Image 1 (cartoon, rainbow, N blue to C red):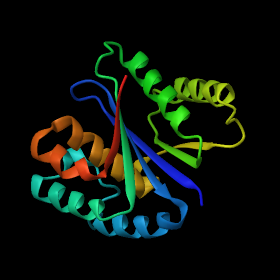
Image 2 (cartoon, rainbow, N blue to C red):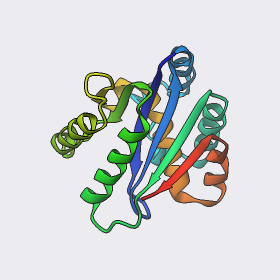
Image 3 (tube, rainbow, N blue to C red):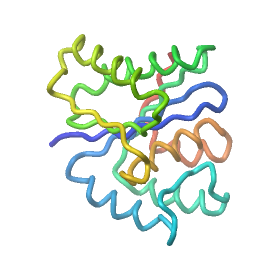
Amino acid sequence: MGLHIFVDETKERGLKLAAAVVESDDVAGARQTVGRLTLPGQRRIHFCKERDERRRSILTAIRRLPVAVTIYDAAAFRCHKQARAACLRSLVADAAKAERLVLELDESRLKADRELLNLQLRRTGLAGQLRYHHLRAKDDCLLAIPDAVAWSWAKGGEWRSMVHPMVRDVQRL
């Protein structure tokens, strides 16, 4: 049974990258659940643009999913580029058992991400084993999970408490 990892970040209070792990057998069901959360006319769930009441509803639903999240906290880095590189290096090292890695696409980071990911995959011996893709959030609804968790973790308080049961590990880089 393989693992799928869905990755998004927030820059609030320093870079935090959330990696949501879903087992292959659970991906279809998770997609159905998250897909039902998308409102009519909405192309995707973008957590920072939702109202608080809706955020609570979304978090309640995704907390029921069989998902484990790792937070890579690079707030100690002053430079975003270095912070993201540190997060991605740690992510690849942790993704050895995954069959698929999906990162939310940001055209401005695509080239640098590919270079770093390919280098790390070669260094860790995972080249040809771990497939990664950069996708727009509208193209894979499961990217809403790390989006929601990263935002909530960075906000703290009630929001962090709501996602805490899903978070299996926090790596401070």
